[in-house]
Image 1 (cartoon, one colour):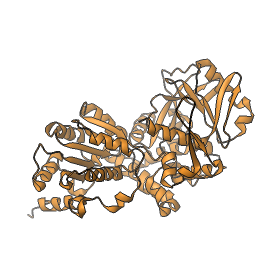
Image 2 (cartoon, helix red, strand yellow; image 1 turned 60 degrees about the horizontal axis):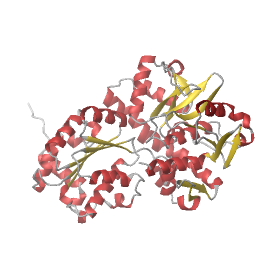
Image 3 (cartoon, helix red, strand yellow; image 1 turned 180 degrees about the vertical axis):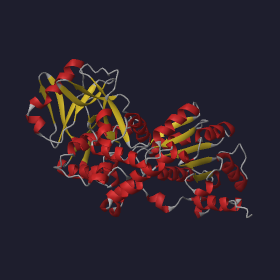
Image 4 (spheres, one colour; image 1 turned 45 degrees about the horizontal axis):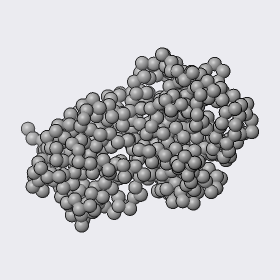
Length: 467
């Protein structure tokens, strides 16, 4: 009987050398990563790495938003501060060669290759860590065993990573969420931020933004809705022209057909695919388990699980309804589901255009997605006589999202909005438009009108500034 061959130590070491090009290569990462624009979140992530505390950093977020690139850019920044090239290890756990290997065994091989001791200041990156079963137990053990080492892990199934890091890594892990590109980052990536946006100051000393050309800003906003959430698509003309194939095959399909089934043991991937397609088409709209079950032909109990999985994979975000008094319901039978990136809808159902019926829902989805770092208190309000698109029940403000200027001229369209404001004494309330910027007092209520594209830019910019 023939004995099956095992992967040799030499083969693993050769792969480590291949992945860690800075061990040679003049002590730098590959030029591709050096030249790639940095996400606006990079300084905050890198600051965590530099802190001398005994905690692992878990960088989480959806596929293709730049987690691996950010990890390599952090490595390059460390190298440029004088950290020895031999004190940094990168390992992608998606690589078949490492399948089934314990993290500590990989660390021990790294120690042997460069003769490191437990007291050396080392930086170790585990990319796509969700592919390792019980990764949180392995990582916590390493943090406890090697306090001098800084461990960084990245992963795509964000909520799952977050849950496990909170359960098993209490006091040992620091989570960092990297969302899709914000609209402000998109403009920066295409080098149009400086020409389209003017930064000012409010009377209170805060930042205020205006646009030099609302029509041009709207053109880029629509481009952002179609492909702008993913750095590679933004920077590649080919990916833009084939954004449907790029986003669907490289991002959506890999999550639905590979990531979720492998993590949760899902056998009926077609059922999951139909559900996600239904949700994507209805992004930003109120739905119920009953209606979702009928339209997708998935049972309610299975639906609840799948919704949890899709949210864990960072494909969707669910928010719940409040009433006219900003009170939540005991039984949450109705809710809104947003795609975390509006580009996914365009990939599935075709490019969106200015006058398309779906623009309203996609604009609302894009505006909601700018708040992914701070959306814990967001809801929508609906009662018998009216509704409001987005409300914050803690900070006590509300926003009505429109892709039209008619709302400025017709105060009747704001009847429900004003009623909610007065009922809850809400402040800092805004109504988005297509092109008009204006402040008006309607029924003794101050309302700020601001173009949707400019509002999305401001939200994205402020969400990063206030990290």
